[in-house]
Length: 153
Image (cartoon, rainbow, N blue to C red; front, side, top):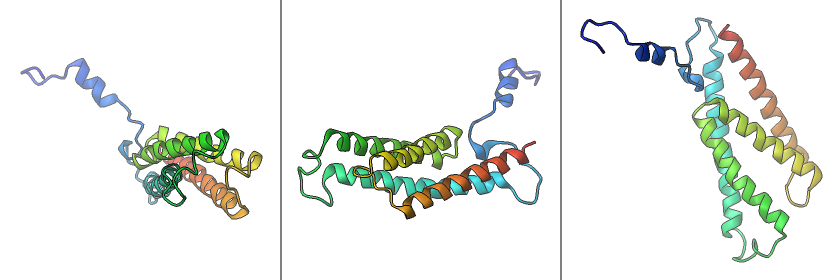
């Protein structure tokens, strides 16, 4: 910063930078802060998706099954489990950070699960309760995201 106290263009540009993190957006003066609700909903989802991702890793590593059983399964099964082992944990990190990309990765992960459960029920478990739970989580996420976006206008 110059000695006379004036701001340089780079300082001014830094203040105008908008983060994709929900918790860093300007605070609205409404009674119910939907961005706060969205942030904590995303963090609860992050904990659930960490557990989901770690359970996929447990299958890969043979924690609940005899060693070598994962390698003996079909290539489609292996690819699906590895896909969810990676995308679930990546989505969980983004959700915990309450970033836009985290929500998008989570929606990709949950839609992948729903589509694979519909077309390949032998590989991806998709009972009625699981599907209803996932669809409810998606509806709540989209609804709270919409309310949080509306409070910023």
